Image 1: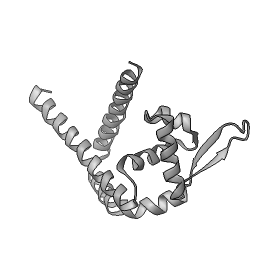
Image 2: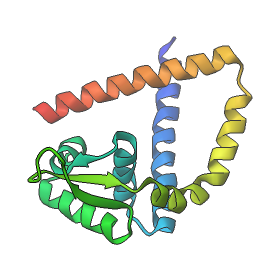
Image 3: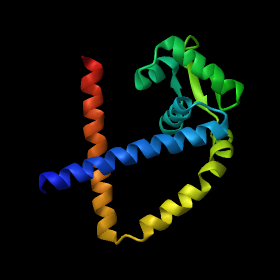
Image 4: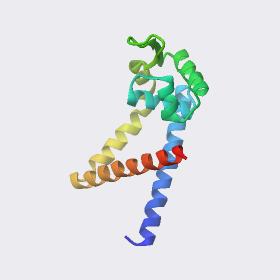
Length: 151
């Protein structure tokens, strides 16, 4: 791949990232959330229940900021706090999946449908290439994030 191709793919990747942020901000506003709160809610959906400390580590937020985040989610009935069965000093934050899905699914309906049509337009081998690229790119981003957070 020559330097012009690399530059063009990087430019498209950056544009994709910026456009993704804009989309998620718009969805978040319609859902009554901030863009970052929306993404942190996604972390809870992806990872499942966790402690505030674990959420703090995952997001890079202070524990105080995480407490405020959880309070906002709890007011909207998107999460609930509950004591861990093995240690009542530990409080788990549990996503209320049905409420989250009821809030967000209608906002993503058109996007999801169009994205699925787009993916279906690619051959199986092209979809494998996309899957490989995204999987490896995620690993590189996670490694870079870990390196930056450990310094």
